Image 1: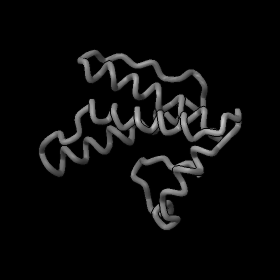
Image 2: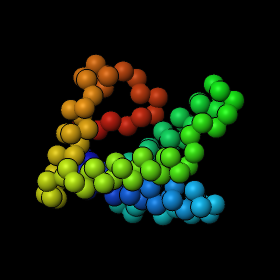
Image 3: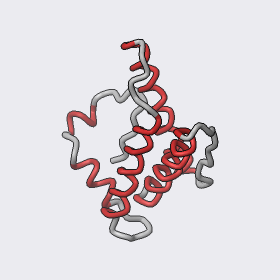
Length: 116
């Protein structure tokens, strides 16, 4: 089961990868832990899927890597400020789940990962 620290670590690693990518260098260092690595891979795949879908629909790349980086940094900072500091805490995940209606969580997600 994923915890706040797993989600924050995955978001931080992905933000760092997009930081280097936005500067023109392709380098990534995914987390070593299995749960964090799984979250990292799913989030990265969802972002790439979204970018491909937008490109197919509009014919243009509408989301820049720097914008993705900024969103990931925001989510990481939000997680750091909203976690309760416990090793198995899920306060940040509960906050994210509370921001979405339950019927939205039941819809097919097209690669988006929502951890209740």
